[in-house]
Structures are given as C-alpha cells and as structure tokens.
Amino acid sequence: MSISLFYFVAFLSIFFALLVIFAKNPVHSVLYLIVTFFTFTIHYILLNAQFLAIVNFIVYMGAIMVLFLFVLMLLNLNESQGTSKSAIVKMIGVIAGMCLVITLVGSLKALHVSDPLVLQTQDLGLVKNLGKVLFSKFLLPFEVSSLLLLSAMVGAVLLAKKDIKQA
Amino acid sequence: MSSLITLSILAILVLYLGLYKAKNALLPATLLGLAGALVLAVLEWNGGAQPIYSGMMLFDNFAIAFTTICIFSTMLILLISKDYFESISEHVAEYYTLILFSLAGILVMVSYHNLTMLFIGVEIMSVSLYILAGIRKDDFKSNEAALKYFLMGAFSTGFLLFGITLLYGATGTFDLTQIRDYVIANPTGISPLFYTGITLLIIGLCFKVGAAPFHFWTPDVYEGSPTLITAFMSTVVKTAGFAAFLRLFLMCFAPLHDFWMPALLVISLLTLFVGNVTALYQHSFKRMLAFSSISHVGYMLFAIVALGVNSSNSVFIYATAYSIASIVAFAVLILVKRQTGADNFDSFNGLAKKNPFIAFTLTVAMLSLAGIPLTAGFIGKFMMFSTALAEYHIWLVILAVLNAVIGIFYYLRVIVAMYFKGAERNEIQSSSYFNFVLGFSALITVVIGVYPGFISSLF
Image (cartoon, rainbow over all chains, first blue to last red; front, side, top):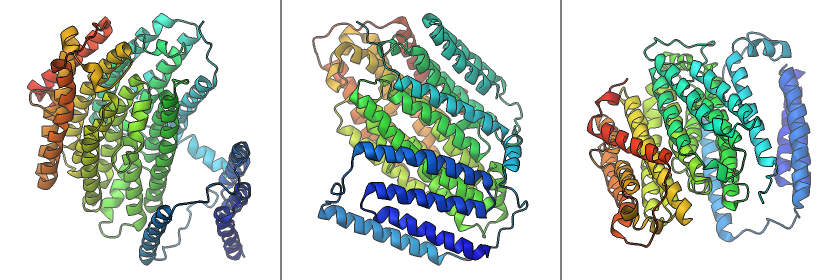
C-alpha cells in the first residue's frame, strides 16, 4: 500500500514539476510549483520525517511561494515577453541539452540497485529526536548559526534604513 | 575556539558602541579585540589539538596559522579604514560589525572538522560580504556588485550543499575523519555518489575562490564594491577559501588524487590564462587587480593539484605574500582615488615625484605580486612551483612561468606610470595610519623575500 502510494505521489511530483516548466503564464508556473512542493510534503510524511514536512509546508509552500507570487505580480510579466530567441541561442541550447542527455545516459549506465537502507531508528525524523540531536551532537553548528542570522539581520536593517541626508 | 568567541563578542560590542554613539572608540576597540583574538589563537600553537564539540572543530596548527594571517590582514585593512567608512554614511559601527562577523565565519571555515561547520562558516562569511559589497546605496555599481555577488554566491552555495549531501549519502557522516576512514576502507568500492559529491564540492569551492570558469562574478563585484571591501574580499576571503579547500582535500580526498587531479589541473591552467591575459587589456587599476587576483588563484591551486606534505606551507606563504602586497595596492588606490576621483592607470602618472614614499611601497607591492626575487611574492611562487615540480607537473610549471612573464608586464605598467610619466598633480595627503600600513607591509614583503626561513618551516 505504502509503495503504491509512493509511486503515485512521485508521479504527481514529476508531473507538476514538468508543468512548472511548460506553463506559458508565469503565475500558473508558480502555482504548479506550490503543488509540487505540496507533493514533497507528502513524501516527507511517508518517510516519517514530520519536522521536514512541517518546515517544507510552512516555509516553502507558505512564505517563499507567496514572496514569489508578489514579485511576479510586481514585475507584471506578460506571456509575450522572453519567448523570442535568436537562432544561435537555440543552437547553444540544443548543444547544451544534448550534452546533458549524454551525461544522464552515461550516469544511468553506472546505475545499480543499492542495498536497501534500513534506518537504525525508525522515528529519526520526529521533532523530539531532531531536537535531541540538535542540542547534543550538533550544538555548536546550531549556536554558530546565530551569528549568521544576526549578521543577516544587521545587514537587512543597514540596507533598508533610509539615510538621513546631511545638509 | 577562544579566538572565535572573542570575535563574536567583539562584533556585538562594536554594535553597542555604535548604538551609544561612541564613534571614536570604534576603531581602537575593534583593533584591540582583534589583537586579543590573534594572541589567543597563537597561544594554542602546538597545543596537541583534538576535535572539540563532538568533532565539529579542530584547532590544529593549520587552522591557527590561517587564523593568524586572516586576523592580521584584517587588522591592516581596518587601519586604513580610518575616515573611509565615514565618507559613505554614518553607520560606521555596523560596517565594522559586519566585517567582524565575516571574520568569525572565516575562522570557522579554516578550522572546521565537520562539513556542517564548513557550510555554516561559508554562509556567515558570504552573507556579511553580500551586504558589505552594497553599502554604497546611491552608487549603481555597488548595487550591481551586491546583487551579482548575492545571486552567484547563493547559486554556488547550492552546489556546495548538494556536494555535502551526496558525500553524506555515500558515507553516512559529515565528520572529516570518518569520511577519510571511509575512503581508506573502500579503495575499490567507493560509491558513485561520492565521486559526484567531490565534483560538486570542487565546483562550489571554485566559485567561492573565483577560479575560472567560475570566475565571472569576480571582476564586476570587485570593481563595484567599495575599495576597502574589495581589499578585504580579495585578500582575507580568498585566503580563507583556499584554507577550506586545502583542508578538505588534505584530510579526506588525498587517496582519490587520480580522480580529481585532472579536473583541478585544467581549472588551474584555465584560471592562469584567463586572469593574466584579460588583466593585460584593463585600463582601470582596480579591475586589473581583480583579474590579477583571479590569476593568483591559479597559482594557489597548484598546491592542491600537487597535494602533499608541503601544500599547506606553500599556500600559507603564497597567501601571506599575496595578501600583504594586495593590501598595499588597494591602500594606494584608495589614496589616489580620493585625490583624482579616477582609478585608471593614468591617475598614477607622476606619483613618484610628489609622493616618493607611496610610490616606493606600491613598487615593492607590484614587484611582489609579479614575483621578482627579494620580495615575498617570489618566495611564494618558488614554493608553489617546486611543489608542482615535486609531482612532475613539468608542463604546468612551464605554462605557469609563461603566465608569470605576462603578469610582470601589466604590473610594471603602474610602476612605469608612476616613475616615467610626468603629469601635473598635487601631493597626496596621507594620514599616519596609511603611512604605517604601507611602510609596515612593504617591510614584511622584503623581509619574507630576503629571509623566508621564519615562516616557511611552520608546519
């Protein structure tokens, strides 16, 4: 049951991801991206990773995608824009795409079924266990990232604040 | 570890000093704090370092040496920041804070023992730099530099993170020692994921140090950022990037030398040619320095291509020589630009007549960057080339010597402009801070060039 559910959700992910690139209207594209992220959330739940699922749901689907939509609406992109490409650009695109295909085929040849990875602890992704690891083994990275947030905050205020012009 | 804590507290302290309008205390407090961090770092030398905090950091001699040179270069750069930030806006305390945060990230980058720390260190450094590149809010070029740096940096971080993830997928650990054990324990059956991970890490790190073909952001960002920030980016940040690069490869990937060596060899040669040949055609001194910094990345990559026991030593000396000479070049550029308002080669015309001291120090710096004997740059290049020759990369060295000759040509253009081209100009008024930094750096350059023994046998 869980395997067939996985394949169904995986199919949906790929399907909507393709729609993201093929949609002509950028707003539709973003909406499909939201659906794609939602299928990722289901994947995380299937993997018993609650925390990742929640973070993915709130941050990616909620915050970042809303930001995305806002920017698109501010830019006011039309369908007609960005579709005319010169022949050289198309040629380069074809060559680059072919290189990618060759690489993918080459890596598919090296592909083999790996040993099934059995998790030592089934409920590794639960919030409780994650918190425990974060505050024991990964305490230092956790604390040091406060520097990252603080510097980003100082910078955001610095760049956004209006300078008082000296007379 | 104590120097990292000192730096973090210092940064917050400087922020508070700015809040209470203690303008005059900012620079002395910052310099004092940096000196304290420097002393604390040096005290741990040969302390028999063990990985600390569940194997997150390791303050071995490698980390301490690079911490020292990074803090020292930052001190020199901050000494010439007197009156510089004031001309941009009145938020001087925040600028110092961001530089200190960036330095704290650099400290994490040179002493990590776990890939998560590498990632966080790179991010702390980069985020502060994105902001520092754009602090001239009214200047279009500065905005462009910040945006370009941010987009490119975020993009390259993606590669870095993906590489780290794949390494974790293959080995099940972020710890450098355990990754090395995995490589040694499976000489034949290394997972393809691991190789992909190495490749992505190389791409990410090459982006960060600005090696060709991942160098496209470098000239625009270096040219658009305020000159002092450019000095910081092209010296301290580059040194830290190389230290992180070298640490990872020395500790983990050395047994897989045959896999990644050809790729890095090509990158190194490409970087040399792109940097040097493009630098020839520049009219702006600042842009020339940006391309010359790309070409120096090529020389420094030699140490990783010919990875061995001497690698850390040669990168250390090269980075020291390059940083100190670049600081002189950028300091003189700040002075000249303040007077003439332009940064092309012509604005250096006739400098030797009016300011013989400044012209002399810039000459020493240029000779050092070009790698003329009796300067630190020569010792650095000598160590790099002998490292490469020890691994029988004869063609690499021949092509590198060819590039060094190209390099001499464009470095000499400045000297020719200063000494042999006359122009009507006034004497540049430089403060005692500037004179100290210029004289001291020139002195160190010559001392290392004449007597390299005292730093060449550290490791």
